[in-house]
Amino acid sequence: MARSERQKLKLLYLRDYLLRNTDEQHPVTMKQIIAYLDQNDITAERKSIYTDIELLRTYGMDIIQESGNYCVGSRYFELPELKLLVDSVQSSKFITYKKTGSLIKKIEEMASIYEAQLLNRQVYVTNRIKSMNESIYYNVDEIHNGIAHNRKIRFHYFEYDIAKKRIFRKSGDFYEVSPYALSWDDENYYMVAFDSDAEIIKHYRVDKMADISITDQERDGKEHFESLDMGTYAKKVFGMFSGEQRSVRLKVANHLVGAILDRFGKDVSIVPDGDDHFTVSVDVIVSPQFFGWISGFGPDIVITAPDAVVEHMRKHISAINEQYLNTLCGRCSLDRRGT
Image (tube, rainbow, N blue to C red; front, side):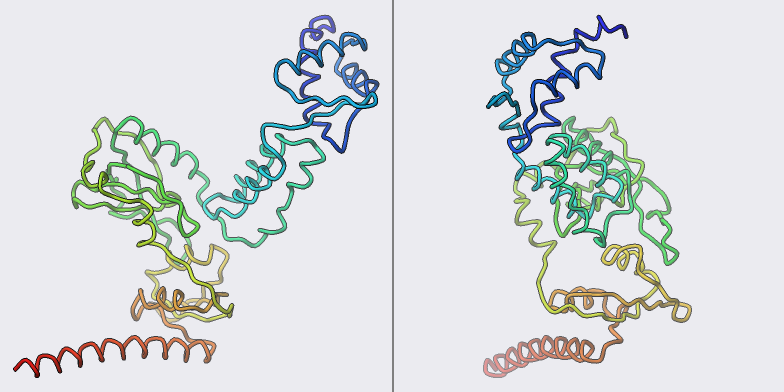
């Protein structure tokens, strides 16, 4: 592009330069502005830049001038707000490492180059478990389109086998449901939908969905969602408690490898233990919620070490068993009194 043609871009280059290279702690001089424009084959004089700065102010930019220095004051997003966005992206389990880096770079572009350095806090989530499904963002978009256009969607749904490979449910047949909401809970993204065949509301992990497409059929099950409180629904399905962190060893039935990968990530070491089980050592927060999670799989997941946690689990189960025995005995006593 000829230098004369680039002159038409002067206002845009000036705007970008001020946004990316200045903040209240890092102003620039008129000489620096002219030098930057010259590097981009744009001729500029002080008088014309004064005019351009006034035009940008009229447009809405908060350009501060003090002692011959210039900088951008307030922005559309303040630095604390950008930090919040970065932390949200970093802490989101359903966002992959690759997409996390890409999103953070885009967020950094909304700050000056100096403020962007304060947003680069990747060290805090270096070992965080992240989703393995890179297509989740497109899945979310397609689900929203289905909801917006009142259409059913179809997709494949998968789990992982002991070799950490995808195994599609329903022998690879498509699921077809009516999407109504997306819920972000327990560090995962879920689609809440109506299953016409089962005539019930179901939820699906978005990162376990593949080959999503919108169908020509209108959604059904609307009456089921009109009376549904999503906040209450999410609380019933997901939950979290705190406790002491311990390293525990689990003996797990092979068909539950997907549950282990979901909870602890793909990098866990899986060691075969006979034909039907494997063992895995993981760091967990020992709490009633952890024991509840273990108990939910019945005899298919067993804590084998350390002994203190095994004993804690035994007491937890014993206490629950005692409660139910007392309940049954109390009912028996009432029945005898009634007779």
